[in-house]
Length: 458
Image 1: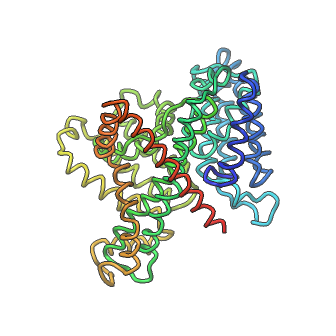
Image 2: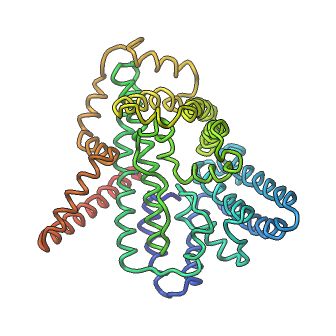
Image 3: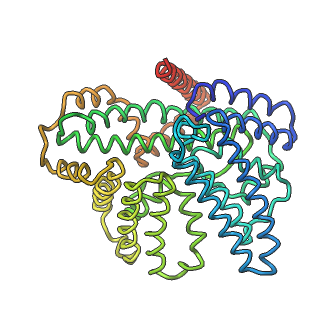
């Protein structure tokens, strides 16, 4: 089950939210969250849920062992931590690849779990034991509190990598209010709109540009940009929905991404989309990289390769991870003062080209296709400038493209939000008009998403 399924947000989510309001105690809310999360996880394949329960027991035992050993024998505690890392890596390979068993097998989970969701789950699980080892938090003795952290459905699909020390007080004591439910529901609908409406529109442009039978110049450029847009709005939509579900259950945690920026060149651009994951990787490597420019640069390469594998176990992702990591490693060796003197338009052009040429490689399954696409970017092998299908998709989704640009471009987004806030605060009548308009647009977006998903299901 995923957040954008009708069965989830029109069935399981309302039931879970309603049941959680029947009692104020955190213990009761945790129980409801665990039970509904079990339904969420096991809907695709019960065997996946069984494996996740086993990892809960593994983390519980590993963290207790590390907690007892770190003061007596640090080396043995480190050994337990590495064993826990190996277990989580094994779980990720089994669940993340979804290809070890035939599709018809009882153990096959190819259609049940998203690799990126498994990545967030296993990294989050390991982060708990790592934080116990590093002293960032204490080992949890109440397995039901740990189970709430590990199983909650709003942590399962698209992060962020929430650390147990940050969320533990909210597991033990939190409240679900009408405001938190309202804010969460609004954010959930906005995330759903990103994932269902905007991402699908870009998918059509991507198919017309890159999937057309004849290669065209603008098709190669716009098709790849649409592919990036499809991935970005799917990812950020799932992240928004995850945070929204947390709000509806009384949890508050950081965003998993931030506004795209070219200030820190390609490295800053990549970090924008992987905020919590890269922060965790920095914590792991900090004893080696602290105050050492060379090791910090090497970390950029290693971190990119690990992040690539985190999203999916495939050769194109690893190849792109190595290429992007190599560029980021070189960027880290350049003094910050030098990078600050580069004009912003030059930075933007550099990041745009590097992102398109390097990260675009994840779309292709072989070097020959990737090479042909690179040549088409400069007009080699093209049959024309734009296909009829591409023109139709772009013109048909022009309004959606404008909205997407306003969301991604931070200056434009901040300008619109600033003007809206200024209008809203100008008078009581303006405040009411703005609020009613937002509510109407949110309701219309929800209806559009429901109709779109129902049409797909039909």
